Image (tube, rainbow, N blue to C red; front, side, top):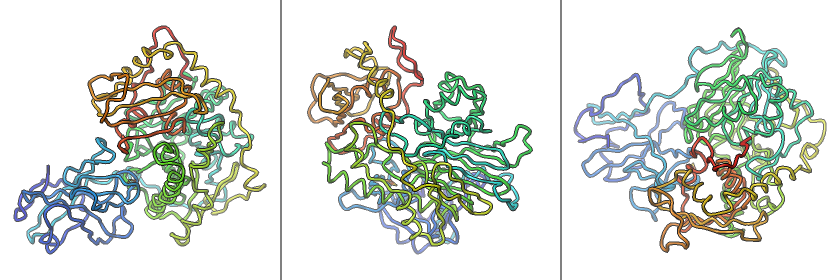
Amino acid sequence: MAGVQSMASKSILPVTTGEYHTICSIPVSTVHNLKPGLNFITVNVAIDQRDTSKVVRLLVYRNDDQSLTVCRNLCRHNGGTFIHDIEDSAEIVKCTFHGWKLNTKTLNYTNPPDCLKQEQLKIEIQMDGSLTIFEPLRYEPWAVNEQQMQSLKSNELTITYISHACVEIQAAGMTLITDPWLTGPSFGRGWWLLHEPEADAYERVANANAIYISHGHPDHFNLPTLRRIAKMNPHVPIYVPRLKVNVFSNDLERLGFTNIQITQLGTWQTLSKNNESCARFMILPDHLFPHLDTFLLFEYKGHRILNLVDCCNPNGDHLPSPVDVLLTDFASGASGFPSCFVDQFGEDKVLEMAKTKAHTFLKKTTKHIQITKTPMWIPFAGYFMEAGPGDEQIQQLNWKNTPESAAITLQARIPHLQVWCPFPGGKYDVGSNTASTPSKTKVDYLKRSWNFEPYIRQLDESMKFKPLQTMDGVKEYFRWAEFKNYDLVLHIIETSNNYSTTIREYFVDFAGSAPVFPSYYPPGRPLFRIRGRSSVFRDTFIRGWSWDNIYIGFSGHFFAEPNTYHFKFWDHFNNSLPEYPPSWKGDHHQAC
Ligand code: FES
């Protein structure tokens, strides 16, 4: 553990100014008052972009040997602040946003367990006994080769909303489309589009100068939509981030796309072939899921449009500032927690938790608006509905913010903030700061019916897949999945689509170096139970797809004993499964 060996010693850590920068200084009087164990320290600084109240909040743990372990009081999940809960041991702090817990001595998160580590800050003792605190230099690749701000003509730089997280950014006639989801469901059968895209939506996407796909979730990387686009124009340039796990190019190639740009994060991409255009964009990483999730900075004549998509912790909250327009999600309700935990908490508690979560969600948005100093916020990437047959309970319990309610909350917190709540075909012009007005009422833009049948039929087809009709196939799947050495017993209860009939159930124990399948629950072991749709389970297993379809797609009811969020389990089955699906001896399935 790095830290101060003796409070009287001088600098004990080399400080490389090329890699670290000073974030604050702890005065000598405060240093002398540090007590053994945990200390909450707040330091006033002139400017700190990560904390708009212009203070730096630190957690300082004084160890038995007098060394110090120092980190920011800033949760890795969504940037919440930690407090000490008297129920916890002395070195544990709890996040005020969603309750994650951090051991301030080891800097390991303890809830969720076995997952993340908090970044340790470097310290240097000055001659007068004060402490200087350093952290790695901020990753700000957009600051290289900055554009000169120039005035814009009317309609020279515009944003047109298409659906959900799909917008068209147009600069001087060049267009970039983000995350096209125009048809069908996402996450198995869980999410359905709330808006009906305009009739020209496919033409806009297929004829764009660039399509950006932020991450692999199907409401952003939507295969039914992309299949149709590939038929219309297989040569349209598609920009996907270069990530540790290649979640895009296999499927894009299979669909027939010929111009797939696997793009290095933090590098400018221009929108013209001859590089003469000054419309450019950059893909940037999320900090909580750097191997998975990204966001977009678009720049034209020095004007910036920042699209944070639905990142949890975009670039560790090091964001460009100021930006002209900020697009973020707003709704909350984009996962199975808490709406799929009725078995654990009961309906009333789940609804109460969902309302709290939706309210808390806007703290993240508030922070990002303040950091980026944007005058204009566009709520998007939350226009979906749990419309599928059998999901009426989820629809009722999965409480979400509306764009209008979010606007009221945020404008009360941030004076002078302008908000444009978009509608299909609606356009915002950055230069004139004007938005088109809808030609019909808000309700008339909402979808009233969905074509469920072909998608649900396709999922139901998985029940005919012979290998998974026996436990041998189930065992083959879990061996393929390679999740192991984690103290958890998974209890899967496969049910009919409306959950009324149990089709089969089994246990999987992950404690050893390979999964084992006990015929009963081993008493006393941590348990996680999923009572879920058999068709969705089997379709997910056959294709080797992420369990997002089950968890985010609301196709299961969950119960944990003890009540723990098994981040490591979910991170594996949602995000880290092998790149290629199980081979399924002799049975072939089309992944697309
Ligand atoms: S638990 Fe800390 S921000 Fe969510």
